[in-house]
Amino acid sequence: MEFIYASELKEKFQVFGHYYNLKLKGQLFPSRRVADIVDRNALSTSGLQQSLPQAVVIMMNPGSSSPADESYRPVELSSRRLLAADYQTDWTEIKPDNTQYQMMRLMRLRNWQHLRIINLSDLREGNSCTFAKNFRRAEVLNKQNPHSYLHPKRQPELLSLCKNADAVIAAWGSNAVQQEQGLACIELFEKEGIRLMGLPLDKPWYRFASPYRKDQKLFWLEEVNKQLDTKAE
Image 1 (tube, rainbow, N blue to C red):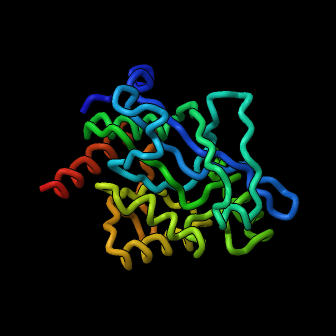
Image 2 (cartoon, rainbow, N blue to C red):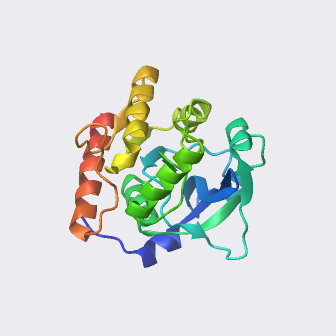
């Protein structure tokens, strides 16, 4: 399998997302609710919200991805507003990161025009150890973790984002701080009859989609592509 580099991928695809800052007892946590990757030639920005993604990939957290416009300022949301969804979704273009480039490779391989990335937690942090610390700090401030789609009030939104996709792929790695969210996600999807694809490790973990090494990236692509081929038969 040929490894496609970022310079070529970003000519074909672009990424949009919804960022926000979650306010918990006066402390702000930079967050991202969703990221959608689209084929530049197939889908306009104005048609993004009406489009249904061919696949949804569920990962650990949004990492360090950031808006392309450095002057962009995300909306500030309390837990109540986030859980009630009584705010206007504000889409902005994203500067792609390595994980999103890996998703573009999968899209190119499958000839997909629209892929959605969501996460077990919305909290933005590129370093996994620092993310775990931020996750625990947020949990002390609000033990129900409103930044997670596995919060009871956000589960209907999670299902609505996934239910019409041809494939739902788990790729959230194995960060111990998210064991409860991983188990809850698996149980919810089993209950709803949604098949989770991906490369399983010890439950509830799935192999991360974009490891550091190129050969490992290719391995993930090859194995997930085989699963998708089998599903289509």
